[in-house]
Amino acid sequence: MAENSSETLARMSFWEHVSALRAVLLKAGCVIVLFGIGFFVAMPWIFDNVILAPCNAGFPLYRLLNKLSEISGTMPDFSVGNFHVELINIQLASQFFIHMSTSFWLALVFSFPVIIYLLWGFVSPALYENERSKAGRAFLFGNVMFFTGVAVGYFLVFPLTLRFLAEYRVSDMITNQISLDSYMDNFLVLILVMGIIFELPLVAWMLGKAGLLSKDFFKVYRRHAIVSLLILAAVVTPTGDPFTLMAVFLPIYGLWEFSAYFVTVRKQ
Image (cartoon, rainbow, N blue to C red):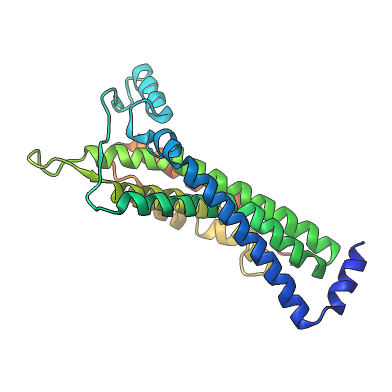
């Protein structure tokens, strides 16, 4: 079957390839539109129960931190019983455009595996059997890691950042009034950035296969990585307590060490 597919692909002219690719892109566009419509309809519920959930003290991470601070006397006080972030809208059309843009971004993220599957159906006939097997596992692994990073961003990084910045005061005379646009910008950027960061093992594997990266790199630059990732964690969560800093640093550093596992040792 694979040989027949390859032979059929080889017999296709350039314009037949273009036509096949156009059909794949059209299907991908339809998938994004369908997801977008679904998210647009469900957006009020998604906002109330998912996107705005970190604004309230009942968020799972806040409850967990409360319990940990009650159990251990050495941890900082994470009491957020009265924590609540009230968002305001200062632009006439902001809520409508945020409704549209958030629906699009969510549609793009959650339809990504389907789009990859459609593109895979177009590309795979040109690959050898062993190449198809490796590339298929890579695509699957990349999707799993991306959504894992999104989950870490949503359940850990963004809530910690929001809790600190929402309560930070340069002066007691200044009251924080957080706009909807500001909240959504930080929400989407932090979560998507974490999803991209979690693709590091896949990138390391690809660079290793291309001969551009070796295990020695991770050994030589481990100290540099620790310092750089500590700075990154401090920027993402600019809080004074070490627990919050380590809560963000450790998953990212673990990802660095995990990436080294996927780089093969070069044969001498």
